[in-house]
Amino acid sequence: MANIKSAIKRIDINEKKRSHNIQFKSDMRTHIKRMEKLIEQKDAEGAKAALPSTFKKIDKAVQKGGVHKNKGNRQKARLTQKINELGA
Image (cartoon, rainbow, N blue to C red; front, side, top):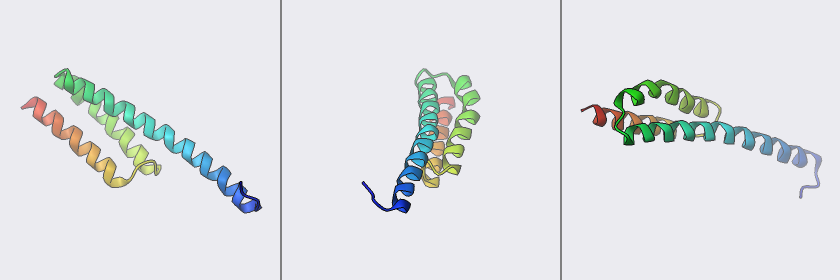
């Protein structure tokens, strides 16, 4: 455990940020799993309707620093590709 006051503060701040990031990442993963379940069930209309809210959650996680920008873009591209394949 840290002995220096600033190091103790840093530990507290890092823990708060970690728990904050976990919330956004968890929410993002939940929405992605819901989308994949809709795609698996071949529900094109439901998947297209849920796409904007899922993109919003991914963008929010990127904006808050929970995930890297490229990972967010990759997730969105893969979901879009799966939906396009479903519709075709």
